Image 1 (cartoon, rainbow, N blue to C red):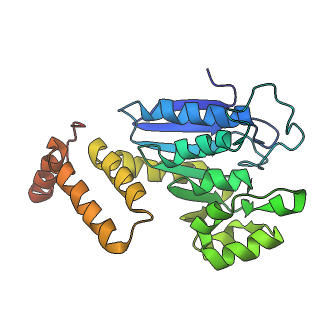
Image 2: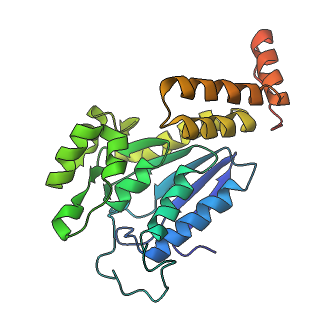
Image 3: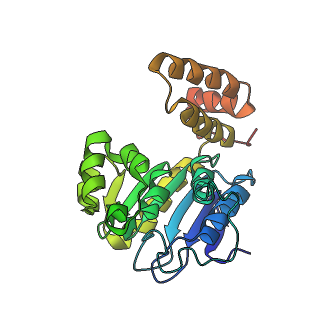
Length: 257
């Protein structure tokens, strides 16, 4: 059983709720649990999409727990690479074989911004804020994640200043899919998840893998890779069913194979 995360599975959607009051601060133990939880969810073929949310009112995730930093008893995997614990947790989200929707209800700062940035779709409450305050507390990190959201030049401004921006500002920079009233956040994330969950499981998983593989590729190589994934998908019965349903003007009946 996870200590800091609650998992609900319903209608092919896995909802993972971060629950470490007061602000979901990150420690090595939390990152270890993130890796375990997302990998466990990914092994369930019935799961077609993940909603990643916070059970804590005050924040999505306020970043590193500076008060407990360096005091945990559990050893790091490598004394020369202590950051591997955090990366392992983040990459479990990034490499999750199904799409991950981050529902950001409040501040997503530092490591919290990282958790949102490695998700596939970010939906934010109008109360949410985003930033990389590390430079002001003697740390660095999250610049690469912030660049995924806003591009290199906006990233540098926010990174060097440590300035936080509102959800509306982040949306204007292109870093969010939607900004919604606070009370509509969970429903909106669920609506998007339901739309994705209606798709064929092989199609969703191959699409996620294809996008991850082509993310940093040159354009020509990326499109060739996508064509290869299309050929793989066409071998599944669900692909034939999708095309038949389109021709017959009916809803497809996917069997997940």
